[in-house]
Image (cartoon, rainbow, N blue to C red):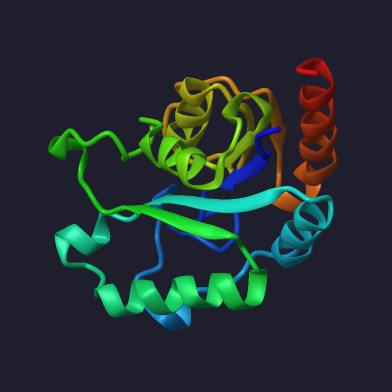
Length: 184
């Protein structure tokens, strides 16, 4: 049977976003990269149940020159070593590039599914922006929206809403079990 995964947006789900004027931005300096409370434990609980924890993140600051590739690599090494995520998929494109990987398009989820033999219909996408929910829905995943009240329109409706990844874990685990039962 194909595997199940929890796809996790990075900024605002695992680590703090930098919020300016009500809008979230990725940290561009290593000293600003801080895990959110409970995110380490949440990933551990997901992985302890046998599910993959895969980060899928838009990082256009690489393309615009606001962040150096070495800093991004260092941040992702911290995610691997301290959180134990199974893999990280990154899109550095801008919306104008028209790629298939920039959320809300599901390209990163499809790439992960191919690499890890994941059944997307039995998996969950977690994010704090409508783009994350859109990517998950398009890929056929259940979706969880982490609500921070950003000053942007929410163009997608998630299956569940939480205030943190830690709070969302019970729903995520129950949804993964339910989708596993329903597809047998």
